[in-house]
Length: 345
Ligand code: TRP
Image (cartoon, rainbow, N blue to C red; front, side, top):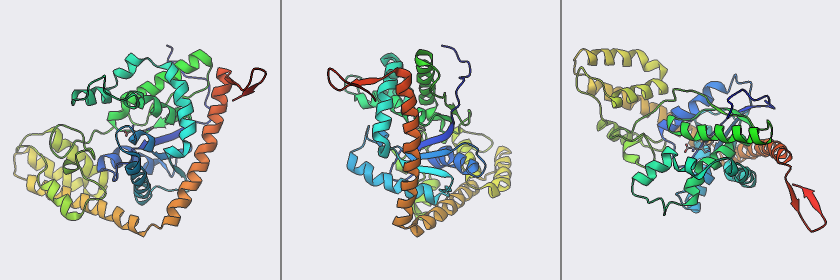
């Protein structure tokens, strides 16, 4: 398949989605939300930011997902998303649009390619059998591709764990365009070297699925202190993936602490015993950041949140409708209503 630039850029957009997990982790914040905060003032492209509740349904009951979606929207606003520039919506408000496109994109990807997605392989490794995995799990990247291609997003800020999914979205866009003419935009990750933030301990990445080793926006100061007290660091004079990951997080959350951080790391490399100081800095930065978000979230009214979602959804539906019109036209898709009558979809 050719990787030549596609001669369509009807609009392009910057888009990312976050799974509603009840409370975002600081890894979510740094990987997906901060790039948008950095860009929202200057980006020429429209920015869409949505809560991926349909994706959450792959492994969570609908009632739980519905509650969590609301709270994730509040978190996003509290994190400082400028809702006059960023279109915030919940994915299920576009369920018909997303699923229509997912059905079309499913024709452009092989089962074997979906089986190779790292996130599925990881799940299968942790006990699930291929025969028992749901079709929803297999289709996860197709649904994600639909989210992205539906708005012709050109740039997608995601964490490193999502790069393989993004690659599949690019593949589906490329194949669709090759088969039916330049219609969709091939999305690029926003940062090739997306930050990988590790769990506080152990080999996994930081994730809500292990809340004891993750820092959550819902954490109290006491919880933050307790978790960081037992985080993995490195012996004097040595480095470790955990120490590096914690340092990246500190740097991303509080630019003002960088000089103190550098000094501590230099002392550590020189063999001094400074890991207690490092943890104190880490805890202070996390408490300050999470505390500020907590205060803003509490101050938000229901009416404010509703107004943000209404405006964001209207924008997203309009953008989706345009793409779907073009996709249907490219496919020449018509539905037969009766023996005698065909109508354009
Ligand atoms: N799969 C992403 C995650 O688990 C969430 C997501 C769904 C997403 N659709 C997306 C991210 C589209 C970026 C673009 O984090």
